[in-house]
Image 1 (tube, rainbow, N blue to C red):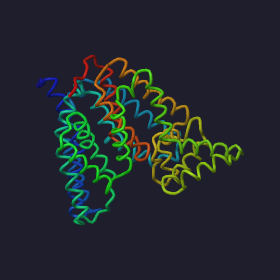
Image 2: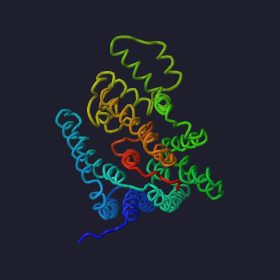
Image 3: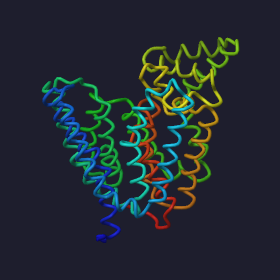
Image 4: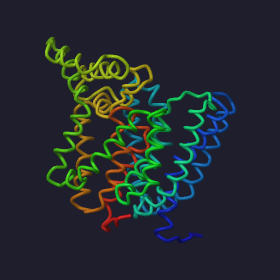
Length: 391
């Protein structure tokens, strides 16, 4: 027997499924932090229970996704499966990471992608996101207080905490821009300083990016005429050091030493931490610039670590050919979004800030749900005719 539900109810189920990831994993983090658990049987038990809860929410709305997008689910799933299998066959050195991280992709990232593509009314998702953000805010405050007061024995730094806090952060910032309510700015400041104290720079960059684009009048910044130029400019500014490192290492690989580039690099950076990672990856890109080293190759070169930069990750894994193709597809989707849909730009800016901007300084796009939510948002809206009303 097939139970019929309304379009709004269906979108709510899908939206709750996606948001359950943030809520359940933050609750898990609170428990682990409070009891100071890092590893062991109890940790695995808590993580297993968390996965069961998330799976319940996703299974609850799976039939809606399959009814709406069964062809897309089949085709996209087959595409990624073949892509990983081909890399497994041709890039032997990458197999140890392909075996583990491809599974993580299909469990963590791919469901977010196909579920977001299945959403028809993004105002419903935004409403669910707003309601969820209050609980996320409470959980972030609890975790931050535990860290500040020394209740937890876990490390002060938490990348997960900062990225999950981005949802209420950007929502309160958007609300403050529109309504100028004191409660919004107070919530924003609490969350912002929590990230400053315990979070990652990627989340902070996202917030700063969102704020300045809003101040610069988003619709003008992303006008149809300027969208390609603005996107390329952002990519260039975010990656100026990496571009110079790439050029410098390529010149060295063909026997040319550029003293000017070397001096410029030594004046703007020092090769430790991420800079050391960027140096290793750019040197590898210079060795195989056209087709790259295969999926997760950066993990091979960095002993399990990742590139910490979206552009370098793509170039390392897919080379110039694959990198240009992927970035071109993303730009085309963004352009078509504005040309065809004529929709409210607030959600676009929010998902762009959460899903793409952090990846230029941290994270890996394969296992970062925010990135796939952004892709799903673009594809979902391009396939629809109805405009988004201002929420």
